[in-house]
Length: 471
Ligand SMILES: Cc1cc2nc3c(=O)[nH]c(=O)nc-3n(C[C@H](O)[C@H](O)[C@H](O)COP(=O)(O)OP(=O)(O)OC[C@H]3O[C@@H](n4cnc5c(N)ncnc54)[C@H](O)[C@@H]3O)c2cc1C
Image 1 (tube, protein in one colour):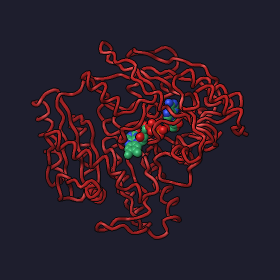
Image 2: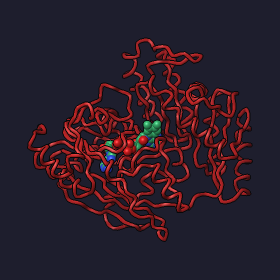
Image 3: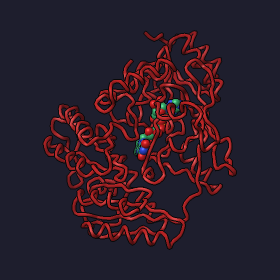
Image 4: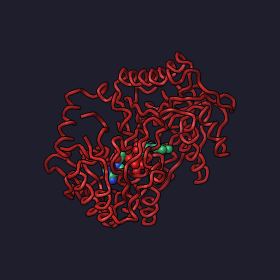
């Protein structure tokens, strides 16, 4: 169905991006055959990788793909967790390494205009110098603006500030026929027809290639504190979360986690979690405009936690202590990564999260496995890790029959997501590996409408084919 890339096409691609921006060596393309998802089975080498320098080169390259029917897969930093940037049909992988300019930080409008290849580290640094703040904070700061928009990334701070979609005000997109279009702009309101902007956000590189974006910025909060609250069991910890919300606390983040992954991460980083007691924890981040305001919130939070069986409340009140806690939380994935098969992303209404996680642990017992589960408690986004190995007292052992158990556990957890009125993905996207679960959560009629939209944007199905749903 797709044409193979031959010498003639390579020459044309070199004319577009320059020889130094094209990779054809198989060894050098291995990094482009996968994302952060651990599953080796889904890896696929592209035939060619190109690194355009601007939107015109992007446009020329995709026009060529359209003419010759060659699949093209956009790739940011490859930190995705569902195989979204894996070139399943081969063809071209387009990397944005050469499109990483911050074009303008507009202090009057509090907006930044930047290219798709800018990563979060550089974005935070550049706007931080101007005293500005981009709240979304997905766990891997090497992720690019293009990838963040294409997946509608979330992260821990979504509870108070929202997800990436809430901050994207405009995008420059190259459509599969090569036309460059500008959608949205530096305005805070827009009621002008269907919102193509919101359609493109979260479209996982299947409808258009994002080349530039305009992001809304905020002024950072004056003070921020992080609390670590230990409990004797996870149920008590998670049950506290809706009570915080009901008591009008608006935390920046509420993360839940269990002792096992915390200990493994402490060992990996040689850092200490602030408390050793308890088997489950809440990590609560609060911010405010003044010390006085934040102290009131801390008091209320502390009391609610203690009233609900918390063992203690630890406050990380300086930058170093806060960074220590955040570092352990954000490196948990790294600590488990080499021993796991997949990290799931099921999201349930937040009032259901305790019941959902309790059932996940029942599945763990049923399959005699280990399913370390942590996540964003206040937005119902639960990351269960399906493991190949389990860690007991610091040593790892292979889980018996993990190959046979894997698909069964995966299905059971998604069915639990359904039981608790959730959704298959809260922030990672569907990509390649969650397609089979989309219709469990989304009506067939809606998926059919998505297919029609895909056909309208991309009639030859050349842009990131094989993702979200099959045509
Ligand atoms: C340790 C760790 C923690 C993470 N924590 C979070 C988290 O808290 N919240 C969260 O939401 N995610 C999280 N992620 C997942 C990941 O970081 C996000 O999905 C991120 O948005 C991916 O960005 P990327 O640049 O790496 O994109 P990639 O992985 O390269 O690509 C992701 C998708 O975007 C498409 N794409 C990339 N660039 C473009 C473009 N310019 N135009 C069109 N499509 C494009 C790709 O085709 C693909 O479908 C985490 C990942 C890791 C490894």
